[in-house]
Image (cartoon, rainbow, N blue to C red; front, side):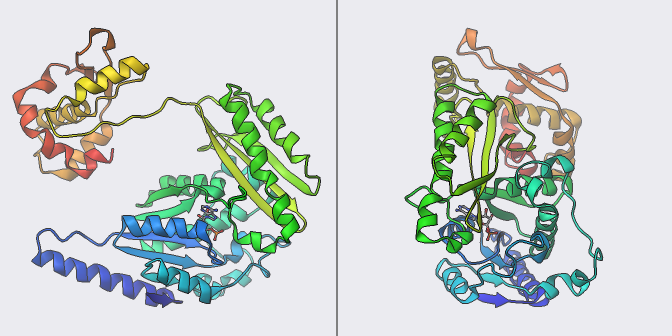
Length: 412
Ligand code: AMP
C-alpha cells in the first residue's frame, strides 16, 4: 500500500498504474483498463468505513481511500479542532483491507493558501432546495464544503466508482446530484448503514460519547424503528410517522433532537405522504456530541430479476410469475431488440458505438404489457412507431447480442 500526501505523488502513481495496464492491453487482447474505486473519508476509520472499502475492493482493480478532515465543511462552532485524527491506525486498517493508496493531504496541499483568504476559492454550490432541509438547515456552508471537496477528489483521482454511506443520506443525495449536474464521469455507489448490536449507527463521533451517553444514543435508531413499524402496518402519513419518532425520543430526555424530518430521498424536499419512498432522518445532541441517523421507507413492489441462457423459457416463467404476483413485467429482451431495430433502421454501423450512444440517448421507448393474453409478448413502440412485430424479425435476432453488449446500450 502507498501513502501519498501530495497531489503530485497521487497523480503520478495513478498515471503510471493506468499506463502500465494500457501497455499490457496492447500485448494482451483481453487486458481491461484499470478500474479505480475511491472511498472519501475523514479518517478515524471504523467498520462503517471498512464496509465501503470492502465493496470498492470487490468492484475495482485499484482502491484509493482519501483521509482528509475538510475545514470547508465545518462551521465556526463545530468540532474541526477536536475531530479524531488517527492516521497511523487508519493506515493499518487500510493495509489490512487491501487498499492500494491512502491519500492524506494537508488542507494547504488541497486548497493552497486561499483558505485563509476569505471567499478566494472556487466552490461547488448544490441546489438551494437540496440544502434547505435536514442538516443543511442547521449547518450553513456545510454541503458547499462537502460538494467542493468531493468534486476536487473526483477530479484528482478520476475514479470509475466512488463509495458513500447511506449513513450521511443528505450528503449522498447531494453528491449524486452534483455528479449528474456537472456531468462528472463516475458511478456513485451507495452503501448501507453499519450499526452496533445496540442499533447505534457507527460514527467517528461516537468516540466523544461516555458509556452512559452511548447507551442513551440508541434511542435514535429505536425511534426510527417505531416509525418503520407504523409504516409497515400501512400508515404512510408523514405527520403520524414523525410523531412516532418524537414520542420515542422523549423517553430519553438527555437526547435533544435538532430535527426529525421525512423527505424525498432524491430531491430532499419535505413529504406529506410516502408515495414511493421517504427518507426519515434525525439529528440530535447528546451532551456536546451531535449524531445523525436515518432509515429509508420504501412503499413499492418488490423487483424480481430472472436471468439465464437463451431459449430456456425465461420469458414464459417471468410472465406467469408477474401475473400471479400482480407485478409489472419488464421485458428487457424486447428493449434490446427495439434498440437493435432502431440502429438497423437508421443505417448506423453496428460497431459505431458513439453514434449508437447518441441514438439510444434520444430514443423514446415504450412497452405495454398484454398480460391478459398470456403468454404473449409486450407491445413495443420506438419513437411512436409500433415495432412489436418488426423486432421479432430474423435480422434483429441475428444482431441483438452485438448491440446489447455495448455499454452505451446496457448502461442506459
Ligand atoms: P466520514 O469519515 O464520516 O466523512 O465518512 C466517510 C464515509 O463513510 C461517508 O460516505 C459515510 O457516509 C460513510 N460512513 C460513515 N459511517 C458509516 C456507517 N455507520 N455505515 C456506513 N457508512 C458509513
